[in-house]
Image (cartoon, rainbow, N blue to C red; front, side, top):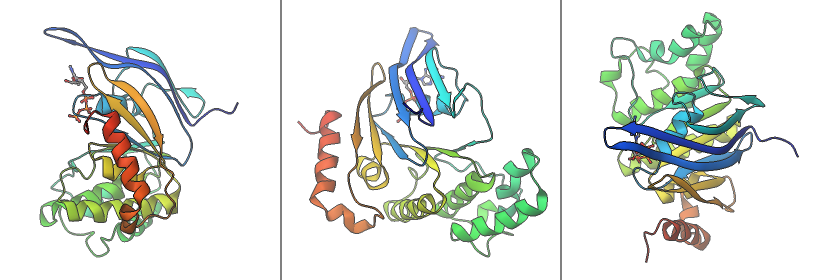
Length: 254
Ligand SMILES: Nc1ncnc2c1ncn2[C@@H]1O[C@H](COP(=O)(O)OP(=O)(O)OP(=O)(O)O)[C@@H](O)[C@H]1O
């Protein structure tokens, strides 16, 4: 059987805390295929960020194995990119300089990076904003910059931790549409953390449903909705059915 791009096998994470060991992830196994859009959903504290950090090589696992593109994986690497809820932009650098930063750190060709930066700003709808500073932009625009920066060094896998969680509902929907458009165009593999079940159904090929204490993978849901997806898909009875099934798995609708 061919190997998945990312394979987690019996992953566990135990944190040492003042009150004793805390099991944040318990025996989590999965495979993620190249080009898939995966969401991790579950209530606060079920281990979504911990799992994403382990996937990003930022956090050490306590047990289990993790393989990325056929190699054991436990440290940050250039074919991974991470994006967080707040954009962590450098306020003294222009938007263009912020977007180019990962490429500079990785020592990529500066001319190519400059061209790519302009293409990316265009792609995220920020054409003409390259010389502005982060403080001059709205929260939604700053997350667009973060998205362009995430793509700047052309990582194979995008790890996104509630990237639009701090945005208002309308901006979040716009960003979700943009993300899907970019994902369809670039064919990246995405792992996306969210509390929002509707957002996960709208975006994903498959949803990893997680439950807390200890953090477990309760089940994996195939989202059998057609693509490309537009907001109208939310009117599809199958959309509501999937949202309901996931909420029930999470114990929300009794
Ligand atoms: N560095 C740490 N030290 C000790 N405990 C931690 C640490 N990081 C996370 N935890 C604990 O591990 C569990 C899982 O946390 P995690 O942040 O992964 O959950 P989450 O599902 O991402 O939550 P949220 O949706 O609120 O961000 C929680 O009980 C949390 O308190």
